[in-house]
Length: 294
Image 1 (cartoon, rainbow, N blue to C red):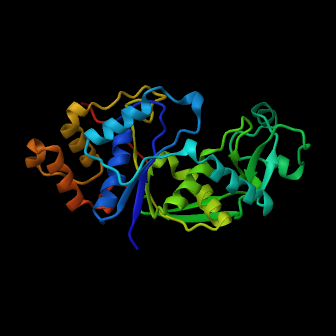
Image 2: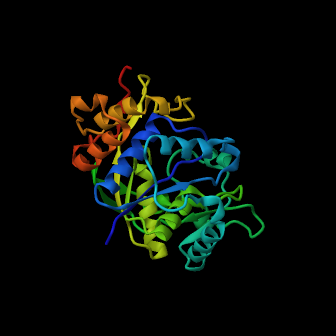
Image 3: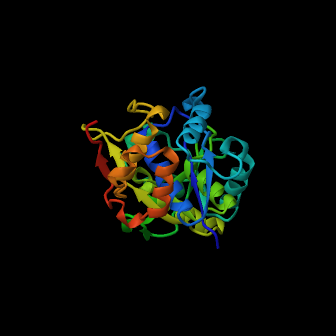
């Protein structure tokens, strides 16, 4: 079976260096195995989206030589698919309505995992509700190709998670699982900031009857203050005019050890070398790496 990977940015701003690292790792992992690499735009949260961000993302990926296969997939066009999956979960009794507000959670002292209140005390039919999925396992383990085995203890109903929000938007967890299954994605390479979302996604795959992809989480890049490079932390956009230098820097951070003579190589020569020599076992098995001085 051929392997299929994907890169799935949100259009909340231009790509930054952390985005490039994730895109490059996913791209190389697929191209080194003659697999397909898909591009999905996760545009499910309009208030957070930035005008022009989609065009900027597409232009930047193209400028860096990270060319995707097939048409770009937009989550905003797939709402019926998410609704169908949500109804399946409710019909089979593996999800429930939840009316808890953030204020109510704070009042009950809930700061991390949900306390299962609405599973034990169902809200009225007229209440404005989110939908939570019942986590099917008290303990869960999965193997990450970079980070190794990960184990989670959900403490009875404390692993229940939101798949539909009270504001009427589908949650990330549901959309990403439905889309990966529809596209036949076999391998997911992404940043370690999403590693703790993985057990929820695996649970959803099981409940919806989907197969589970292989997962690999690369370290996220942090600034000297320990903050992850992100649009929220005002990480600067990557400059396509510096693509060779940025690609070399990304390859080094991914543990690929590009030789010194690639310093004068073209973009395509760099990518050709990286595809041929890609070694995922060389990627550092840490959750974060501090951004080096430049």
